[in-house]
Image 1 (spheres, rainbow, N blue to C red):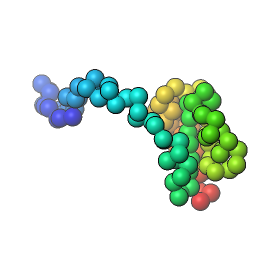
Image 2: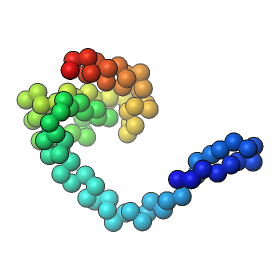
Image 3: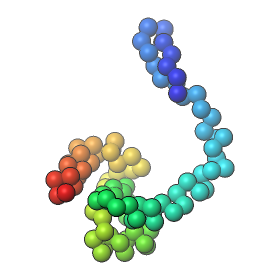
Image 4: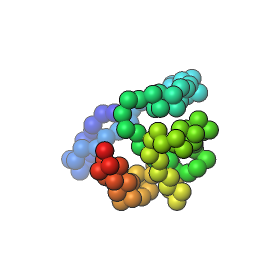
Length: 98
């Protein structure tokens, strides 16, 4: 990303990366992510945009109380943008329980 001045004199960010160059890596981006999340030695809080986004292992571990889960069924991919007030409240509530 680079900053360029617009005709009005203000700065604007322009994306300069060709994302398609990273396409060969896409299938493996999330490999092992569940195990890494669950293995982390820290309090965990997972926010999902729907129940279809949780795998069986994560569901089992949630039932065991291994992490806090919040599902935003009315949101899309970017839950923090779709419902920022609820996202903030959920995060603050999680922090208060620590």
